[in-house]
Image (cartoon, rainbow, N blue to C red; front, side, top):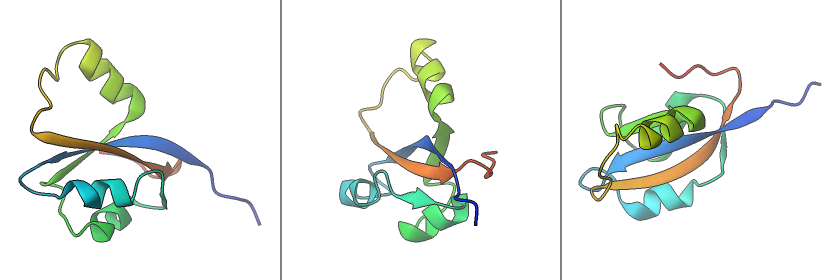
Length: 85
């Protein structure tokens, strides 16, 4: 059986929608789908942004994200075959 491969993705959640502990509790955990992430922390796609690591870095470096004082930031491992829309 072939072992699944995973990649790091960034989670951004507004502090008003999700508790910090919810994001911290799933850090570095492996997920096979985006839906599994939403289910794990009981949220919707409107409450949580999931970004490829390189996209997040580009947004920060290009100053498209200028303030994150109202966001929690976390990361998880997402199956490499899962697409982020």
